[in-house]
Image (cartoon, helix red, strand yellow):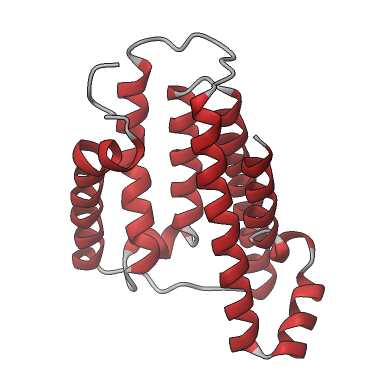
Length: 194
């Protein structure tokens, strides 16, 4: 469990700098330069991510079960990840209506992803991992919206075509992950027998 917690502290801590330490972050960028800062930030984030994956994998070998999950809840949770994938795609396709309206669709998608996994899973490692990401996404979204309001950010309305493309790409990515990649990578089939 130690590796999982350490990984979460590194990864989510780094990704929380804009929430809790923006002046310090800006000072580091000024001191190191934008590219060097991004390089070090990326390497440290990758380290945190690797520790999360490794720690979660180890924790799954001897799970600390906290409650009994209702049988059908995993299917509902898997369905809840569909809009999460659409929101993830919306974060990367410029000029779409979801990004124009929501501002930070990846954070909203992260909230849905984390909530879905909290509903479907019942161990201490699950609560640490998905609960940690859920709390982080809620705080980060709030901070981002406040920053946007303070800076007077205006986003142009997105086009219907790009929004439609986002929805289609999100559905395709979700289907590939839900029906194939999740089982291959995580050893769990979201719509399989449980």
